[in-house]
Image (cartoon, rainbow, N blue to C red; front, side, top):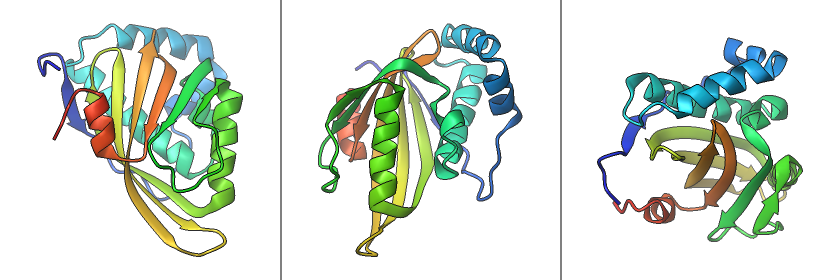
Length: 185
């Protein structure tokens, strides 16, 4: 893949005791306004400094919403008919490899919450392809039944349409995610 239109940037670390950000509060109160702004953001070039800053912040805020189990804020950027694909080895989770809709995302989150405690996402890097965003994360968790600590570097390749996430490919390995995005390290 041509590196010309690809922007890589670090993502700020999550805050340990996060609360909803002002942007999340406005988004949940006035969703049409925020979706209009997100649509405008999606038209900026991938190398735009404003776009990089806002996407990095969005990746971090999404991870914080996930970590505090704020499903309403976490699901906001997703299209109601979002497609989720789980690719690679998932550590024996009992979940289908493909699902559709926010309800499917909620089922996936419930399976993870049922299997693990102290489940924590730490974003590392965002890679912007224009119509797709690859988020690279460190996932830490502890098995509820076994107490076994799990740590994995995962990748989430999200496809965007007018600023909304319409598809997520969840890779249990960052190397697989980078390869799928056309970037091998």
